[in-house]
Image (cartoon, rainbow over all chains, first blue to last red; front, side, top):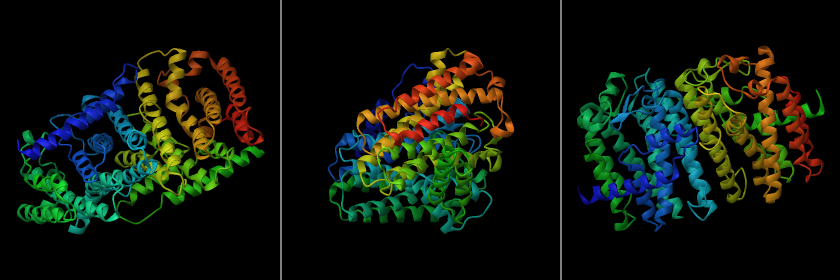
Length: 295
Length: 295
């Protein structure tokens, strides 16, 4: 394990502990809901978004416990989106992170509710004073996450994705789709660190620009892995995009140019961090990791 | 139309205007999402929860535009819960407020996403500075709504409802279920007024107690209307609870005792308002309206 992978895994462990505490088990009759929320939120994953929150917060000497709560909130939103995306009416996936998807392990109704409850909990966590002493910071976090996750962000991108099944997308269209569907949540992960640290607008914009390029590079590699990846390593079905006839960066650019483009974007992402000192190294290393990953 | 009905209808009109502005149409390719959100949020309804927000805020001389934004946020949460509740995997309803349910008018995937986006938008609206100049008020509104709508509130209650299909509930169990499923959103509607008005804790507690009793009375009448009501007046299927073999207040108490109990609760609800002057009359009148309604 490289030093970077150890750092990534440390954040993943810490955010898991935070999620464990925030999603407390109980034995009331509706406990099935908490079980499904925990199943979906604690089922592994690289925890890239929490790493972005914690690493960005690290630039501004934010309390680690504040950063971890914000990281857990962003991850709840990510996990809810996967639960709803996997539903039969959406992508109809049986496998996620090497395990049965939430509606397969529980049932469809429970999966819908678990997603709803995770999304709701994310905002409860951010608005709670344990996340930050300043209510301005808390309200700003809620506003930024809701904007990134809603109809002008992630959910809007999922709608675009559904609509796009009936069209051939151009490069600008697919870039817009991916920016909304995955890029904005990645961007708000970095911005959360800046909000928590009450950073200058310049620093926040630099992080936004970094995250924007990183998000696109991440998606290009995701598309490549869907074509070239090994189902056992990925922990989810491979080749689904091609089967669904979906336009992806790879179907548009071809695998070689998609990889070149991803590498270019990763370099460009790091350049946006030039105003930061070595505290930004975890973010720089992540940009390299993202294009080298195999799962 | 009585004076009270005119006041209720005035709030409904104003909150519709606010929702119209907050859910702006556009012609981007994902506009289908906004269409489905607007269809679900602007499809009529008595707007009881917005009336509670606006009337409670009226006790503390809150700006009407602040109150209407908070009211719109609460109503978005209510409408999202109806959209998801109507889905085939949940209650599988075709009719709502006299029109096709969202998944019937659009499709299941769009309905899931429209619900998600309405829930997310509610928090975006509350956290935005247009709702209140004080970030403490905004963060408190988010916290209270998220708590009421999440796993310990509305969504937890929906889970309980699903689990309850396989049991016979006792009176304390069904009271707990209804308090979570519908009562807590009704309570937070009143509390929102107190939060916006930076009220004393005593006033906030009184409003909470009023809303608690009102919510139970409301639910008892709902159960009665499901048994005795006319589908054409209700705008949704009647007799669904009995068909589903669900325990309701009516199946437990019988129609006569359920009505008596609802009337008692309405009187009790009003008594909690004794510390307020005539500004609380709209809330007092609502308690009477709730038990007299036929739809």
